Amino acid sequence: MGFKDDPHKDLLREAGWHTRGYLPHFDGCASPQTITLHLADSVPTQVIENWRRQLRHLDDQQQLIIMQQRIERYADQGYGECFLKEPPIAKLVQDSLLKYDGIKYDLLAWCVMPNHEHSLLTRHEDAELEEIMQAHKSYTAHEANKILKRKGRFWLVEYHDRMIRNSRHYNNAIRYIENNPVKARLCAKVSDWPYSSAWFRARGGCPGSWR
Image (cartoon, rainbow, N blue to C red; front, side, top):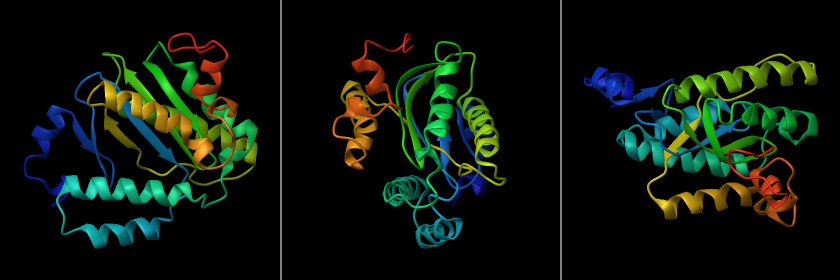
């Protein structure tokens, strides 16, 4: 049974759970979360629908874990047109993340990859994660499409979020996010990738004063 069909979905929403498609999201408290956005063509819709059919016998939590793993692996292979590999587009997305740092959320780490974006942030008490991500996606999609002279969906509808459990998880999350370009052989050191918190940190930046 999916979230939309759950007889307790109203209570779940009150507790902070919601969904806009195939993944459940939690936004019940202001605490650090990792968030991943993928470009719309990084994982074809038919592939996702096929995975959903394959996994429908599992409960929501099992589906969530497996879907996230599969989407991450698929996207890491560099499918799609990889619009974020273009410096103006990558900078646009990075600047959008930085714009509301300290205003709507505290941005702790991020990395803009050729076909996806990772971030680690803590939303402020008076903000909602879904609204933050929707505004970020809408603005960057509109501006990127103008630069690219294209129309159509830019991001996948869903984003992936995961609550940070403890300090070890927090440190591992930062390492994972900032090591993405090295893992993908886009650079030799994490501090070489200009669209990441590692680049800023190597030049004296830190959360709350990345600029």
